[in-house]
Amino acid sequence: MRVEEAGAEVLEDLVEQLADLRHDLGKYVCFETRFVGVEAAEPDLRDALRADLLRTRCGRDAEGREATETAWALWARLRPGTLAGDPDITEIDALIGRLQAADLSGDLACLRRTAEDAMEVASVTRRLLDRGRAALVRSLGGAHG
Image (cartoon, rainbow, N blue to C red; front, side, top):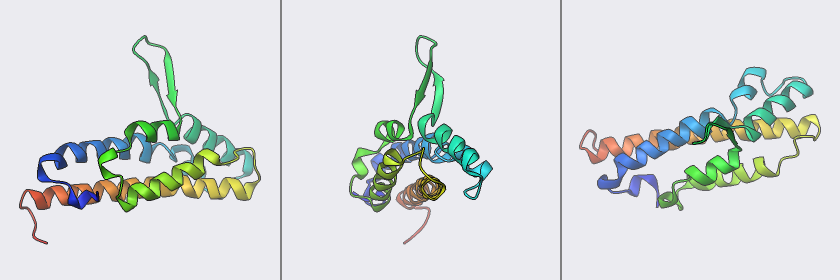
């Protein structure tokens, strides 16, 4: 289902899920990479990508131990199953697959392609959230269309 096809009764919860996805994955999948830039020197870009992809979310578990999640583990946990047919979900699936398969010890060209894919995840999660919010507004009668 596309986000625009979701019923009004589920859109509010769905938008909350999409906001979490945007924050937890979309923001942090390229957090360090944004600062060094795609054109950064190879060691700097490699370090940024390793931080962004292998330690996308860091925190503490219930026992207080440090816990980290990779970008693909975070996507697996937060992926909204109700939107399986949505084109943005399909695009994120493909991007995350490429990120997971990326050779972070590869050459600079490989690292730059990987950085571009990570930046695109950020862009697509933002677009998906925007679409969800617009659908919610329409469902509440805030816009016609």
